[in-house]
Structure formats: structure tokens, C-alpha cells
Image 1: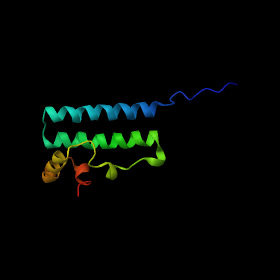
Image 2: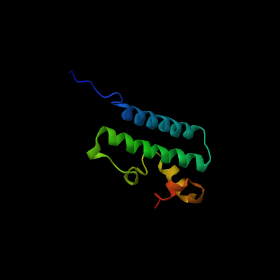
Image 3: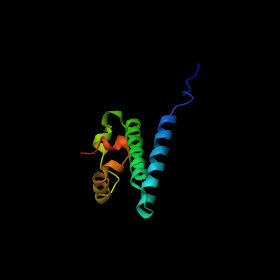
Image 4: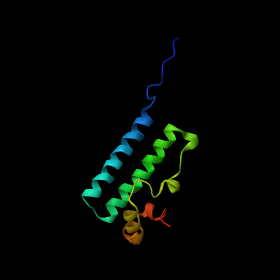
Length: 98
């Protein structure tokens, strides 16, 4: 018998990279077309999850958790604004805020 890769081989990497790309493009779009705090914070949280999953697929030993990724891919002024209006943000993201 010859060796064949599993049917779904690489599918989790494809899914993780597609989700990361989708939320990254949404965050870039929000820089030019502002949205409310809830939508922005929810997209940012989903980008953090997608980035974590992508890093786990690329290099599991060097992957960062969501707390370590918090603050990346977002402008410092936008991050301060989210933290100031914490009560208007997505609940899971509120748990990450200092």
C-alpha cells in the first residue's frame, strides 16, 4: 500500500488563515469607515482568536495566547478609546482589558 495524506490534511491551516485574513481586512476597513464600539471590539476579538489559531497551526511551540496578542494590529489611540469606553465593548474583550 502506498502512503496517502489524510483527506482533510491542511484544512485547519486554510481555515485559520482565511479567518485571520477576513478579520484583518475588516479592521483595516474600519480605519477608513468608522463603526460603533461594539462592532469594532467584536471584530478585534475575533481577529485575536484567529491570529492565535493561525500561530498554533504554524508553530505550536511558539504560539502566543490571546492575552499576549492583545494590543497588536490596532492603533494605540483606538486601543485607548476602546479601554475608555469599556462598557460599550464586546464582553470577552472586556476581560482582556487592564
